[in-house]
Image 1 (cartoon, helix red, strand yellow):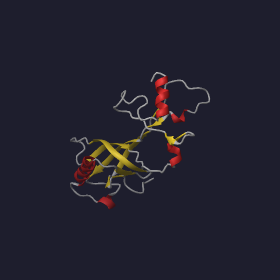
Image 2 (tube, one colour; image 1 turned 90 degrees about the vertical axis):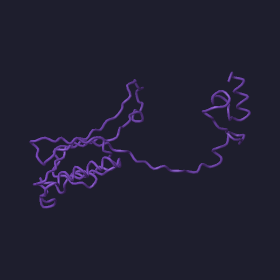
Image 3 (cartoon, helix red, strand yellow; image 1 turned 180 degrees about the vertical axis):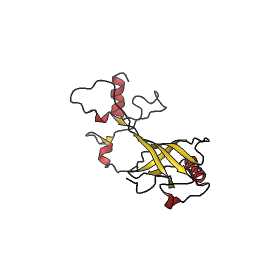
Image 4 (cartoon, one colour; image 1 turned 90 degrees about the horizontal axis):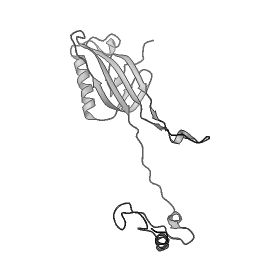
Length: 184
């Protein structure tokens, strides 16, 4: 079955996809868990890793009508690929089966030898970057007050001032008094 489009990396089209491997990895806790405990919160999925070997040549066969045969084409493709790597920007990788967005190029291997002539098998490794959005929300004023007294719940300082930021620094007077009674 012939693919519908050539593989492209950041809009750079290649003649053939030799192989593709996706790695999905996760960290799973080594410690025992209680029966019935949901471990899904403790399993950490890592970003997708994608490894591809792509072919490019001056005389393409698969996409000949699209790319044409011209001297120096493979060198131009490799130069554009190296420029994409040097820009250190996220790229999109498109295959006939799947589109991978937000991919960072981690490695490019371009072997050159006498047998290959003007065709190259380029190995490229990618790592997917998780892109998130921050969101600001309003918290009702009553959530910032302490219990039935309605006084400020205070603040905690983690650096500097009175005991290295641990203890009653920034707390209400009632809290400070109780803190002192219990050896704080």
